[in-house]
Image (cartoon, rainbow, N blue to C red; front, top):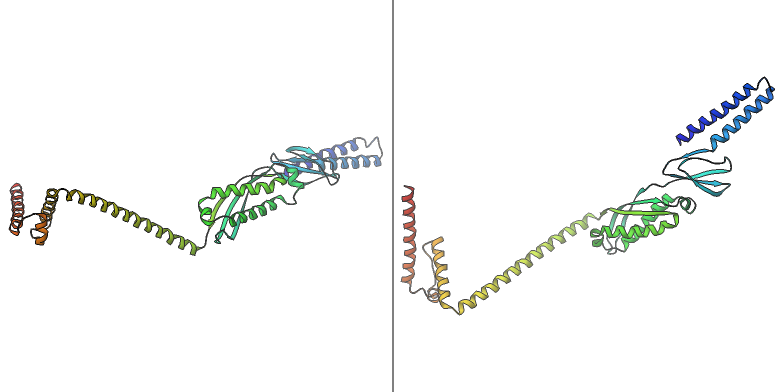
Length: 306
């Protein structure tokens, strides 16, 4: 618009100045009334030309109406209109425009109040429809986006909304594009920025997630115990068919316990007889043997250190 004002002023000065110059040059030939008429004509022509010139930016389209009827779309660049007959009520921006919109305290399908923020990317494809089919296409797009967002939220479960934002964005884009297509507007994309839920519900969801983790841990532990029990059952079957292996295993367990913990172990006589370790005298001898082995190892350690 600044370029238009500057160009209009320059054209007005040039044309009117040329008229004054002609009037001054013909001052000796014509009367003073003739000079005034030439100056007036020059003024009218300069005003007509300066008001008819217009400049549109590369991204603008000018909607020209002639006596209230649609005439043409002009621009970009320099163009002229007929003053008084032609008017330009709208300058349509054909670039991609971003519009943010939100839905506050809207109930989901499972009756959870949420606040959703989203961004709409759109552009005008048909400036004529955008100017003639809707009074204010920018406000219309904003309201259409909000109502579409509320409709989608009301038909979506909270869990699906939190996990599938891309799906919701695609549904919103389709709905809004269908509503704005008669206005000559296309929707490039819709992005759901944030989904806010009440703080109390966040705490409840956190507790639910923690309980679910504990449940999974207990299931894993129970499954581990089941596998251990199965292995013990297989081992028991092996020992049942091989008493010698059972006796050797029992002696090994007793030996390891005596070697690691203490030289005194209280074992019921029935358990000793079951394991086939002999009488208490034999068990005592086994214990003494283990103790002597320990003493011998300690002496060897002392000699090596000396």
